[in-house]
Image 1 (cartoon, rainbow, N blue to C red):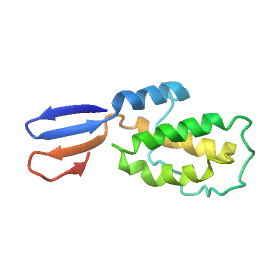
Image 2 (spheres, rainbow, N blue to C red):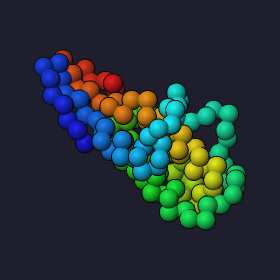
Image 3 (cartoon, rainbow, N blue to C red):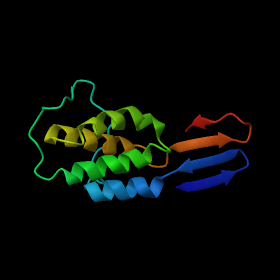
Length: 122
């Protein structure tokens, strides 16, 4: 977690963690997504083919859960994806990668605690 202090307040973000996640998934050079989940894709338990190695999905969702501490804007998407940890499919994995692409838009985003006592998400 990175903490930046200024006279206007304190900013908490996980920029390096986000960039490392983009590097690890191979999405550092891809086009970012404007929204974390595609509203036209409906995820359910038996959509797509089961992943041969569910560990990569579980690891990715676990890292996304860690990011929700400073990025509450992805909490709904990550919570929805975490419902499929037992039997993830390729469709679930693609949806998780979309969240990572969304994070690429602004890896420095996080929580800002104003010195005026008005916390807000930046």
